[in-house]
Amino acid sequence: MSPFKALELKNLSLINRFVRSATHDYAQECNGLMSDKQLEIYEELAKNQVGLIMTGHLYVSKEGRASEDQNAIDCDAVIPRLKEVVDAVHQYDSKFIAQLAHAGAKARVAQPVGPSELWLRGDTPSLALTHEGLKSIRHAFIDAAKRAKEAGFDGVQVHMAHGYLLSEFITPQHNLRQDEYGGSVENRFRFPREIILGIKQACGENYPIFIKINSNVELNDEAYESDLLYMLNELETLGVEAVELSGCDFGKKKYTDHNYYLERASRLAELTTVPLILVGGIRTLSDIEHVLQNGIDMISFCRPFICEPNLVRQLKAGHQSKCVSCNRCYGLYYREGRRCIRMK
Image (cartoon, rainbow, N blue to C red; front, side, top):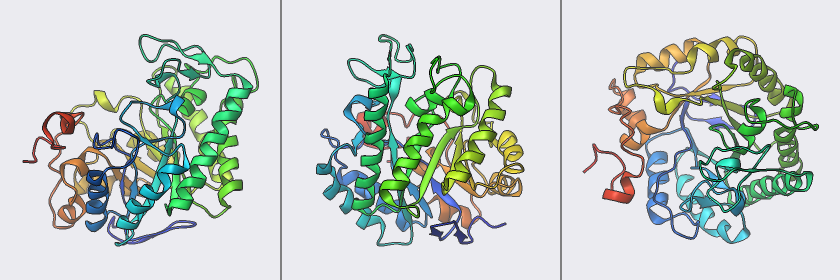
């Protein structure tokens, strides 16, 4: 299976199987709006044949900001600027997806919230969400999806990974609730399910919804694999477009590690029919071929596209990614005005 061939999803036609995973680029405006630099970043990816582009995480409410410098989709005022960026991408053949996020207990706000009292931010524990709080956040996700559709995005990705709010709800280590939103996997999945159903109702059954979710957890990881299979099958039933599998420990991986999460992803691919996207440590054409041969539908990159926005063209020419997973790209744009140490 060639990664360069077109792919038909349920509601989207893609020019190839390459995905730019949601990436925080440190290039935003201070008011949450996308900057000219960000427009340039997205347009360059589209120009260089990235089939599916995810935005960086967009906060659905100010109470759920992961950082002061995050882009927003929490109010109608952001729609005109988002539309400008979408229009720039749509000059080419790429599809553009808005990632919707709430940082939960990791939010950089005075009082973060989560499914339970959690110490994920270091200095301030989260407050356990009340039913009224859950309702407010559910509406925030749904309203954000409506804004994404109005701005012209080809769909949304609901962020359920990396220890943010919805990841906290589905992870037993973090969800200690005793009500209908805690305990069994069915209960822990209840809140994400309500959000997905709400978006479907607000934006239409055919408006594409993608999901990003961890393929592993820190504690009781073997039991989580069973939970994950349940959730993947439920997401298929709910009509999601595709699920991107990431992991809780990508920052600890070494340069010599490749295809971080493929082993589990390949087992899950045999047991579910929902289209799967894999991100993490994919660097060479050999890596890509191995991923696709194991039943994964699309290949996702984060740091390699920072290093080389023209990576798809480079891979097509037979080259491998120049990214060495050094992680020095984190915050580099703030300090030096470049996004990768290999850039001048």
